[in-house]
Image (cartoon, rainbow, N blue to C red; front, side, top):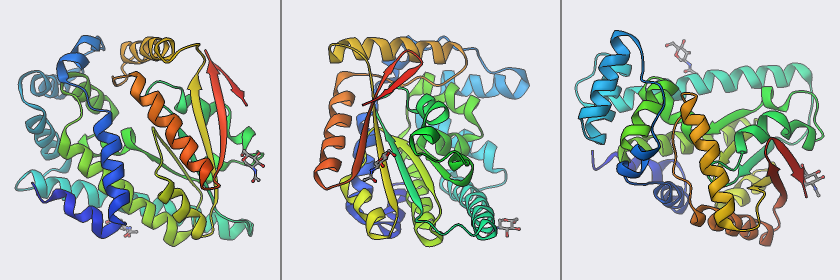
Length: 295
Ligand SMILES: *[C@@H]1O[C@H](CO)[C@@H](O)[C@H](O)[C@H]1NC(C)=O
Ligand SMILES: *[C@@H]1O[C@H](CO)[C@@H](O)[C@H](O)[C@H]1NC(C)=O
């Protein structure tokens, strides 16, 4: 299990991998804190009850292992199950990318591939911005979201454990297991390489983006656009309070919990500044409730 992370440097430049890992580390919080937030509906049915028993009684690594076994089917141990799940996710992603390439060839558009990164702290509203406002801001009414590969850490982690509901139940009780984060990071790196190979549009959201990653996309001929989202508020503390309320609402509706704190806002701002400093196109966005104000 200790060797899980080794694939990462093979797939992508090592510092990128390490930085991605750092970013994920920053989002960890103790299970106790997370438990305080949990009030989502328990999973239903016989299988759901089995999963709930695991998340309530086992330690995070054991829960992750059980879920991998369940999702992967016939496999000998946790790492073999994890490898199988990763292959499945990569295979599905590659099929999806090949479909996109086919559509691109059919439409004979010959523009640069677009790489869009939406940055912001936990609860800042990245998902809402992507759904409601992004295409308009790109000046691209003709379905960027349908033509782009989506890279989202929650989706990748959900795919590894058998779906979003199970993922939510797990993180809401036990936080982000280390191996789960590693496996999701490997997937993210591998998918990024596929995006580079096939030159397809991509959209990713995260707290920060290493400037080196943005520069790699630029060097590979992508049109890179970054949107940095922050909640409206006169202080970081006020923004965190609003984010927490929004996350609580998400959990109550069956979504996953995630810790929100001031350092995330600062890190995300710093990342946006570093990107601007190396000449990346960064647009600032402020969220007020469900409205997005582009600066
Ligand atoms: C993914 O797996 C399916 C079923 O095994 C296979 O038909 C397909 O060719 C695979 N896709 C890629 C890109 O390898
Ligand atoms: C920067 O990105 C914004 C938002 O997509 C876009 O409107 C603007 O034209 C871009 N600027 C350049 C110089 O590409």
